[in-house]
Image (cartoon, rainbow, N blue to C red; front, top):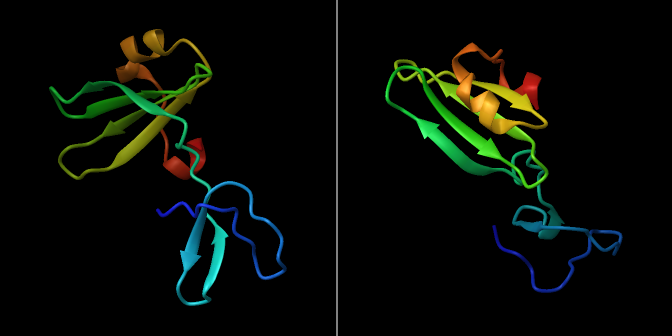
Length: 103
């Protein structure tokens, strides 16, 4: 995504906060879509079996773990606000659900 060097404006000449993307159809700069995972960084991974697990943490201590079935590539997620090391150790027994439910 291209970050415009100056703060772009919308059709009403209002300044857009945060990242913006250029829409070639309208010819306008628009707010970038919200990504609930933007603050998370990969912390752990375990692909030694099926399912595989990938753990992510944020600076505020929140975390999520993605469980991926390697045969059909279904992904499910578990999320918490603190204590990632304990969650990671217990990853096989956490409650997982669809992305839209967890986030």
